[in-house]
Length: 138
Image (cartoon, rainbow, N blue to C red; front, side):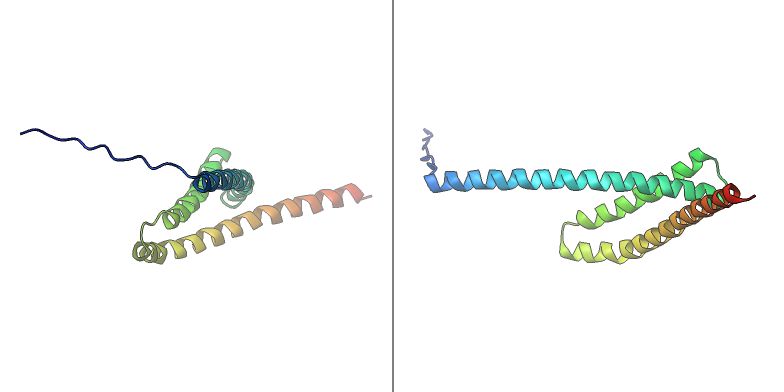
């Protein structure tokens, strides 16, 4: 019994296919740079959110700074994980099931975070007003 080997012909790239791949390469590079830009903006906003949230938590709870930062990191990373769970759903059925649980959690996280951050801003504004009033007292 002898085995026979057949060589399949290689598909040659046509000029049109080469142009399409160059176009696709450019589109992929644009998408990569756009994603990097979005990542930089998201990282900056997350850092700002962490700062405000940690200070707000320390004002509301009188907790030490390291505990406030740990709580702020936990809240923000929990939000990122919930969003990631929605983005990585493999099917529409699974996505609907995941959203049923993540949507209320995201709304609660954003609401609680906004309340705590606004507490920080209000306390900052009150301290600024008090300092301004002391400056102008006779």
